Length: 287
Image 1 (spheres, rainbow, N blue to C red):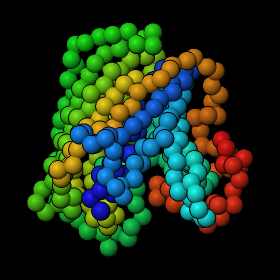
Image 2 (cartoon, rainbow, N blue to C red):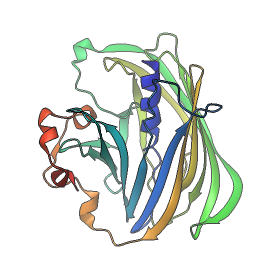
Image 3 (cartoon, rainbow, N blue to C red):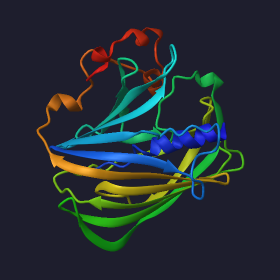
Image 4 (cartoon, rainbow, N blue to C red):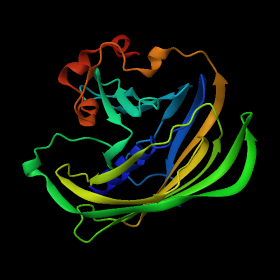
């Protein structure tokens, strides 16, 4: 259970940084490593294996398509799945969908939020209230500057510490160190005006209150970033690096939910494949 929670948070962190410019495309590659270990332990699948992503940026909006391989739910073998996140800074909301089924979830970027990054329709009568999670940390500008992909880049570091109280549902403390290079694209600025008030554990019926004490935020588009996660004696590195940045014409429709998709009440509905989803052809799944 701890490994599942650890990996889930690793994947969640991949979508936390937001920034961009007008009509550009950024191709990236992502890898996950455990320091001092050439490969993951036996029986522990790498959720970032064969994962690549493309970010599309136009005006105040960013779309990220992340492709990865996973086992088929029906039959044998594996298939490629594309997870898409659209950030609409002008509307302060995030839209998520994938190629498993034709559903999308809209998550506000302003106001109050759950630190788990998802909403829940759990019956309030069955919800367990735990203690507190203190989220603290800050951003450090190293002062280093460079020219990357033709853009001015700055070297920033961020530390995020999550400390649970004794009566919290989330029992393990976590520390996240982020070290990266970020390019400045002045035509776009997308601060996330959302402070989490609850933390949802892997048990969806248990919530902790959040004492949010973060100072500062990372600005700019990451072109090289290493996230080091430490929890319960485990340390893991997620490395993401841009391969190329090109200017391309992008349609407005790319930054809206696809035609034929229906709104979901929770992110879980988007991630859970319907029985009928296996009958959807690759052509029908394409966006």
